[in-house]
Length: 164
Image (cartoon, rainbow, N blue to C red):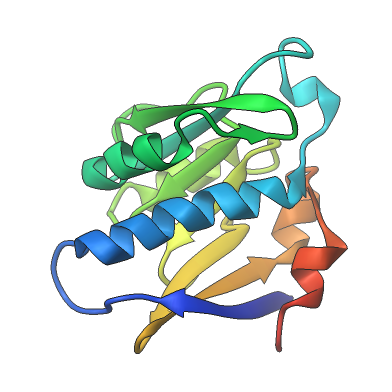
């Protein structure tokens, strides 16, 4: 079951992400994370940071680092990391995946673990959230079943904003 949320303006188009779209996606990564609860066991200790990995878009990793610098999610500092698409991601709480041949393998590597997977474009199996460009807008598609499989609780406030 997927939920759609319409928000913000994005510059859709072929090729590399435009700077405004990159900034919008960095903001989405942060805002969506504020509406998600992870199980306590997902963190090494109470003060551990929320680890955000970005695979397949180094420029977005840089922008996310700028946007999230000094911000907190549920009282936890954010640590942004670039993820090598050839390696298996370890210890992440949020994993953004740009469209790439390695995406399915990375999704499988974190499937059913408490990782909020955010995929660029139409979500595929393993994606909790899809960021879909639709004209001048960016839509969120939330797969509640994938969220449950990952042991994540998505706030009813976020789900209530969704349209079918």
